[in-house]
Amino acid sequence: MPSSAGPTIGEAGEHAAIAEIIAAAPSSRNGDDAAVLTQATPNSRTVATVDMLIEGRHFNLEWSTPAEIGHKAIVQNFADIQAMGARPIAALLAISAPPSTPLSFLRELATGVSERVNQFSAELVGGDLTAGDNLVVSVTAIGLLGGSLPELTLDRAKSGQKVVASGKIGASAAGLALLQRFGRDFPFQFTELVASHCTPHLSPGRGVIARATGATAMTDNSDGLIVDLSTIAKRSGVNIDLNREAIAPSPLMVEAGELLGVDPWEWVLTGGEDHTMLATTAGEAPSGFRSIGKVQRGEGVSIDGQEPEYETGWVSF
Amino acid sequence: MPSSAGPTIGEAGEHAAIAEIIAAAPSSRNGDDAAVLTQATPNSRTVATVDMLIEGRHFNLEWSTPAEIGHKAIVQNFADIQAMGARPIAALLAISAPPSTPLSFLRELATGVSERVNQFSAELVGGDLTAGDNLVVSVTAIGLLGGSLPELTLDRAKSGQKVVASGKIGASAAGLALLQRFGRDFPFQFTELVASHCTPHLSPGRGVIARATGATAMTDNSDGLIVDLSTIAKRSGVNIDLNREAIAPSPLMVEAGELLGVDPWEWVLTGGEDHTMLATTAGEAPSGFRSIGKVQRGEGVSIDGQEPEYETGWVSF
Image (cartoon, rainbow over all chains, first blue to last red; front, side, top):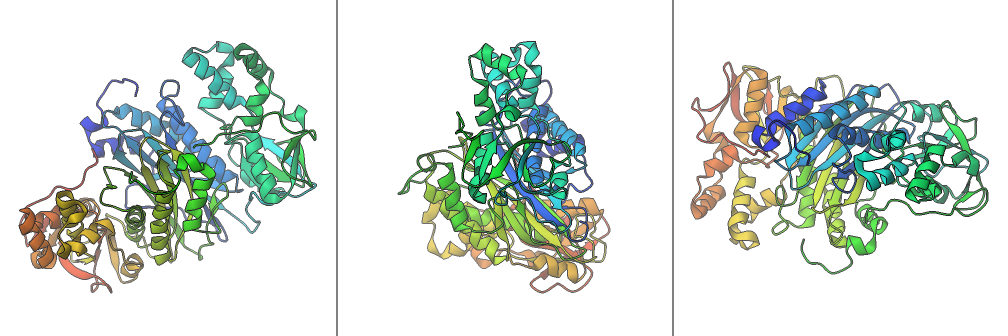
């Protein structure tokens, strides 16, 4: 835990600590036994997901600020909501923290959460704060799926469709590699890559747009491009063939790879946490998406018909 | 972590571990990026809450089985959903566990979760499993609030109402005190008190019934009777006067108090985790509830007009 001015949670007490969070991320729905969400439009369904982040495994306080951790926790959960074709509307934030944690840490984390949920016109509607030996952050995201179109599942990719992507691929892994080598003192020209890791971008509405324009399957690049697309290929019983040129590492990633002695294709193919939306659609690439490959008969994921050079991805155990 | 036959999570790997959980608590809604819930009836709203349980703070593996931990995690979250007047329909389960955790632990925990959600006609629809140094269990509960009546909030108790309760008061604290003294070798006659702590009872539908029959404010006895009712009194700007006879410790609690040298009124007034539903209503006590006091002008909580002998409750920091 970084040193910081001001009282700790243990000194201020539970109520003051919760008040800090609520002040940084206010919502009229917060503060009762449970949060009552806005009334959904007729025919809409509720969508829910949860992710737990552990200090030292999912984030590192040496190179991530509390606000960045809050940002990332929201993005990774809202990406899962968008990957169903839905719109995120609310988040719940459960935190376990040592009593020695500064109150300011909670305030900054909640500020990061607040800025991100606001970007999606969503709200932080509730949560839990408890003492624990380690810092653990669990975010639940809730979304709405309107209209009568089916949700975008992992098992509905169809031969003949395009594979489309919205967002960077491999940039987060490149940023992480730079942080692991240099800490926050990384060479200045790589700021964009490090930002891709610490504050991954997620564009509101991409799931809704993809679903409205004919996408049938969708996920996000959270564990690794090949791993995540392999899940769609397996569940859908198809082959996904990627276009090498369309997923090639950016010039900045190539430069970082040269500096670190790493093949940047490894970041592209195995790096997760970009939270890039990946969909299959019979139509044109939806607004904000680009075509990166095609769905065809067969199995697994290939690149221009060849087996990928790198296939592994993030595993927790 | 108790020793157990069979492989650990670390040995079996993440996918096998998640498969154990899903086999024990199956749902067709599970297994995609996020869970799509059943379509709600018109005019209904979604209700959500989260609680994080830390090993050694919220549960103790020396005297709670994995199934009991799963049971308790669902009950405490579903009680919060019911306390809004809503009906629980789904749960998400996020777990951080050391790689040395037996797979059987996850299976038994999920079995406890499954039995409890089934009792409410709800489902375990998703979750997250990640490695961590400590065992942390975070449950999100989602419910539906149908019809046009307002939800049951903490700030709508009104002078002239009855205070009603459904469930035991102080029994969980008595059971915890017995476990702290004797471990699982407690005297046999106190089985019921220990069960109140390890597998607290929650009756499905109490929130819906209370809301339908005129209740306006509701909570559950999670942090302590006086603490939880004080929150209603403060938010609503009223006094809550309890009837001493109606909340008196049971003969079994008196017996346990004599054995342990503890005034059983301390358990009644400060003990939490009974998850007894507490409501205020202008009507008769709803089905399954009993009257335990009245709402009147003033402030705070009193017992037959006197200040309570014990007032503290559970605080995390």
